Length: 177
Image (cartoon, rainbow, N blue to C red; front, top):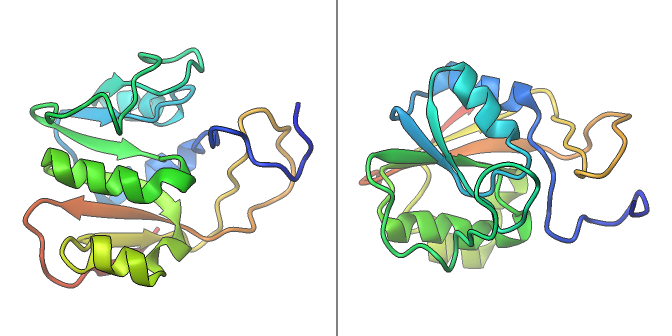
């Protein structure tokens, strides 16, 4: 167990089920969804309850999905006929967005800190040419715990679902969940 203030080395922070439910209340996806940072299956388990098929992979082995599958380096062609829904490692969030764009994914939704909207470099490398189509801000803060941490207390970070759709070039729609 790590001390309470340190980050998990591979950013393993399982997504609360209510976060996925909130996304599914406002968005529809193709029948098959790829979860490339599946961790312990937190997102995929909710998707399956809503009759989606999932492809589950992760760089690490958290006991769910196909381990040692590096989304950023092991995939050079898109998985046909599927969207992506994930909570990527935040330190690699830019790279995850750019990879999905590069793969030509039709639609992808990433759970990210609201502060992802900030930054001059991100504006130039992502938002200028490929803005998200929608950003769904959580009106009540999520509590996302490190994978090895005891759950107590409440959230201190603002999160949102960022949704990209291929060939979208207008201004993003902001909504609340």
